[in-house]
Image (cartoon, rainbow, N blue to C red; front, side, top):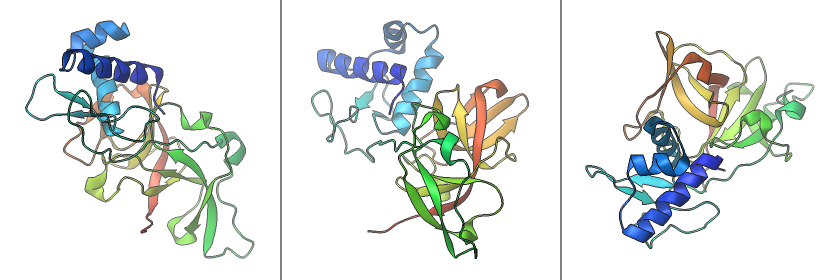
Length: 238
């Protein structure tokens, strides 16, 4: 699921590519979305790129490719050559308000527990706003410690450098604090949820990807809220 501004920008870029054959400038995108600065456009493009909707072509100015549009099953091909999408964003809805008790452990502390599965880490809504669908995942107790836990499915390849791949399920210990260097679920500007490594740099917070294709993003401390810390990972092989 995309935010309204992300969706507006993706539609604008797609139309511009179809009409002109090349991508719009940052100034044109800023004016189209009525934003005050180009930095807002940069953040939107980065978020769309991480989620597989856009691709920046290396070593070329103003070179954006629309990989796919929301709710479509195939890549866009009319405006520019497009590679197959690495994933299909799909938010599985959940509700922290009703399920924040975490795993339901058996009386004898069995070898596995059921954790609530709240959805893919994708922009659109704070995790707390997602509604319950009853989805759960069975997780070995060895992956867990004290506290409340939940699971999220990873969307994209921004953390592949530390072995977290698209489609993996990460186990998160809920909390609003984390040590410097921890991999966290971070809520940015009350709208975007992302899995990144957290670094504190003076009065700023850096969210680092583990893939050289994605740049480190720097925010003021009031713009980032920690919603949990990575404690485990589950991967299924077909």
